[in-house]
Length: 458
Image (cartoon, rainbow, N blue to C red; front, side, top):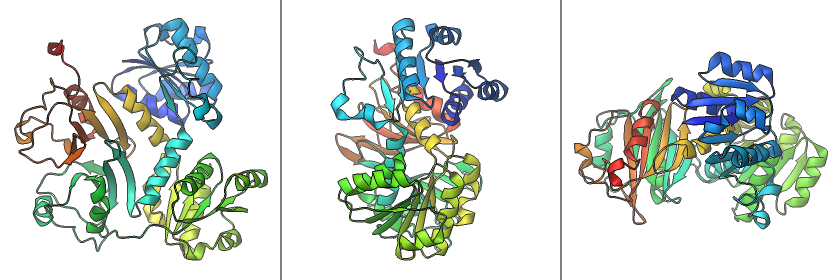
């Protein structure tokens, strides 16, 4: 696939890194010579200095032969014009744009992004994507990661195994025997600094992070099985009243979630603005690193601190301080992947990487085959993929035990006619089934091939 990416910042670089590693033909455009040089030096991709919305720059980057343009610069208007030019002059089939301003995305203007107006096929709103991820984490205390598939009927959760976790040192096949009516499957284990796909004889040890795919109604039971029975947060303090923090507070009010919310915002004008837009939320003007402000927010009796500022260091330190002051749990927004390795050492319960969230959204549309959703794991070490089985798929009609599947992928769940099906050796996948698969990076291409339309179909 030939892809042109406009924007070489954290998101653009991450997308280029992933696609180039999979041997796609990638060109990246940015106005910063430094960022473009980093692309040229570190990735198997071409870099071009210029504006991604300008026809001559797009032409130089190969837009005439491109299968897709992904516009993720810092400016919504540049992203929109880049897609328009790619469509009008170069007839690029698929156009993806990052749009951050919510004014463009209001339902009243839903016809704006259409073939007859602004021809953008996929809109990515990082604030909304990350905000929804935060809300899912709040709803599932004890989960380090949580993503939903199959119209929200199946979930993948990452669960840390502590020293007193009831299921450590128990082979997975024994867990199946002990809990036959639990609709959940352990599909991956992160141990130390590596991830592996477990077999039925493998077991978990303290410190592991288990990736579990479960029917929606069985997620809490699965968390309880791993020793995580934390109640939902009743008191939440949000540090950072920017777009994400404001979105989260708004949604908690709109969805009638029972939690009491306090928001701490450092900018006075912004604090006044969001206070006017919120009805049941208390907004405090101050710094999230100021202990007196945290105490004023009643952090000592709070269940959860959610740090959502644009500064990773503020998010880390405010999370640590909250725990020291008596807050039961924390969740931090971390842009820099280098910080993620020592979060648990510092006492940070869970974190969200906005870049990873956005890249996962893009990959959903890059992957070939009937791919419905993609979620990237551990900075691209693995992916959870939801795909629809076609009549010509090699998966259809044969018991799973008889299929020649790679060792580095595992089927976690099947969604058939509106119902969850727990996969076992005798299970047969049918056409139109939606299959949730946990695949190491090396197996992603194999997953794509399994869900592509074969030539014999025609």
